[in-house]
Image (cartoon, rainbow over all chains, first blue to last red; front, top):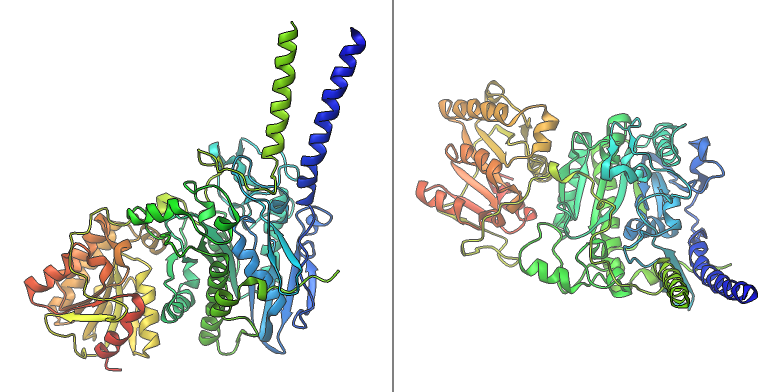
Length: 382
Length: 236
């Protein structure tokens, strides 16, 4: 009788162990960084953010900073992707710059995975995909992780019941998990939580490298009231408005709004208030992030198609995140980030002719739409 | 007893299987029926954002389109007398967009979003961007009542000193709603002309007012379509 019990329990244990190993492979896969093609001759240097925040060294949140210096001096532009990893167009915009851009004057600082820890897991119960890919013309496949908007709790734990760091934002009640949100804890703290050390790295980079403009790339679900909006700190409003006007003249119906005075911890407020940089943030429309979406699929995540949101749009219930049957594809969303960030560089250069930021060799909006990211991203040869 | 053990094992397997399913499988999975616990990605809290007007469209005829980017009703807003002054009533971000527009057409003008009546000394035309923004008011460090008082003094000054007032409503439907309309109504009474993105006129409020007062109103399809009418206004 006892032997029978041991055998039965042993079998259950082995079955569970097998299932855990199978599931664990998926989890461990998300800890493997997505490679970036660094053959672009325009890349001057790659450093780790821990250069600016020593407390990050050796942690899962340390992340690469790609530096592209122009031949001529000029202004400096910091482009953040992956502040919220699941807002994938921001990261893909950053990678597109890294793999294609040539800087003629000024300097680009690009952090494609600002919240690196957030790439190692997905949101429980959210039904997100963990990985997506592009088939490149040479037959190779570029894979990218989706991740989620918060740092992984295995890297920063526990979430306190109440937190009031130096962002000025009180994190409590249903906002306690935001202690792991990079965009709620700026300007950070060199000796704070893991995510605050990332925040501090960005803050210190801005001050050390005398960054002129910050562009924080985001995406939002259709219900959000400021989709396709540039949110600008008050000091960034003049060049932000010029940039948004230029994009409108090119046929992109983007808009601008002012950073809230009490948006504590958010990049456009906290880094605008605490550094000299002109802080901006741009949101593109990602229906996969909406809570009324249909079943998660590649068509939804990359194609940006969702019949529920088309119906909701047709009923006139959305203010800025309207979705048509045309969808909001990843090509369009990434292209929109490229157009907006590029317009900001141009507007800054126009207003500061002594500090131009000129970038060439980037694919055009039409290139993104017609050729697709599969023809813009470079193959990984290893 | 045996039955209980069987149920326990069954439950254990089901639980394990469900953990595997939720364990970020690379296969697509069904979206949850309820929203996630985490708050949505928002650059601002929703309380800081003005909601668009709740009124249903009244079936007002839409005059503009991609093919007809702007139309002027009740006459035309011809070249306005300079010097020009640009200010805001309601402190929305639209005044900054209007600033960018005027720069784009290389107009010469003075810009102060919170100009006081005395600042307008010497101006012949004031272009006023209307629409309320609690964030804009917050950034300017003033309350809605303070803004109304400033606006009232400024508009009275214009009337007493024969300064032409042009109302610019370029925020579309997102600049409609109770507070925005309160500011807009103040300016309308003093306006000699209106330029606006037509989406903001879905209820016919502005075209009706222009017809009633017999003042020209230029309707534009998108904000970018303001360029040509503004060039005409400032003689560029």
